[in-house]
Length: 218
Length: 244
Image (cartoon, rainbow over all chains, first blue to last red; front, side):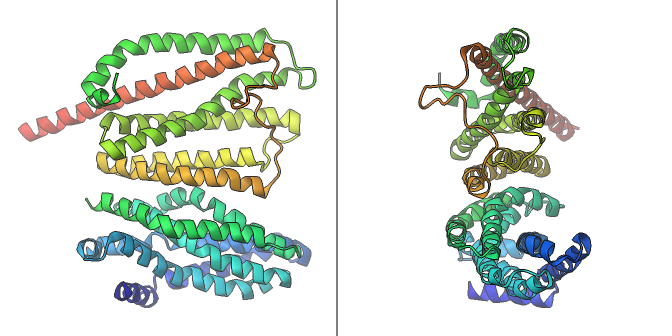
């Protein structure tokens, strides 16, 4: 499992895959938004938590189809499926690798980008905590979407459509936590609810992903 | 009557051929009665005026939009567990009907909302969860269309339906947390038996709901029959290609 994780990480970083892409997208979005809505600090502060969350989510969506696509094309996925490692383990590792290459950098980048968007300082810890807790769920759910569409030629658009409604609860609680943080309220409740969703998806989604993968490889 | 008997498409076709005309007649009759009674023979509401009559389209279609997904969930489970082919086809046939029902509920809701709430759309929990349901239907249908191998498509969409149901429920209650509702609560609570709709409005509404249910069944059966015929045709063509 560790070997697979290391291989995925190295491929993602060296092959110029999703690693830079998601981050760059996030940066571009955060730079463009002030041009779109105007530089008034009050307006920016109001929408910053939401923009940062939506940006992180879209950046995450962007790299989803890479999770299995390349492996499926060159046959690595078939080898992995016949290896002693259960498919549930493989999907978990893939999700973890995806999170390490997109979710984690996005979380780290969110704080400095928050400055660009005039995010109120008291909201930053909530936003970062929310992203740290929420992005794993995005990766795990995204892996499920990727597993569903692995055999398709043009899976990219379809993944977005499939995964979009599944992302809704996470986005809702995450943005809510950041918004409450921005208003100086205590945001523990939405944060805990989101952590619950994340824990549940991490526990259960690998089984659904593995099932979908098995159906696709049959 | 066992549902396993109908895993045989020929048996399914025989039964539905006999059943379909009766069901169609009943559906037309009750939708017609419900709507005509509702639109022309009920008084206007003292506050909402004649816009209240949208209820005869709005409530039944919303009801069927949710029940269609429920039916897809059950038929998907039956397919996954017992490889009941007709069951998978029923799930596939129900999806577009459910999609249209969701759309009708959303559009009539908007038309009703404009004079009553002053807006076509509000990010109210119920409205939002219906929009999410709409997205689920779209994704489900798109996945059916995209996968070429029929059995794989049935498998994948079934898994999507199961996972999607969990998330649909989750979002339904998550949005309550997010925004307070503009939409009223249910007018016909089944659990408590009481209702807040006066009898004059309720009877045509009940008939209309029944009619929409029957219409849904008719459309699903019709679409399933079409699908079975299409597969027979494919099988025939494949056989001819193999022979020549």
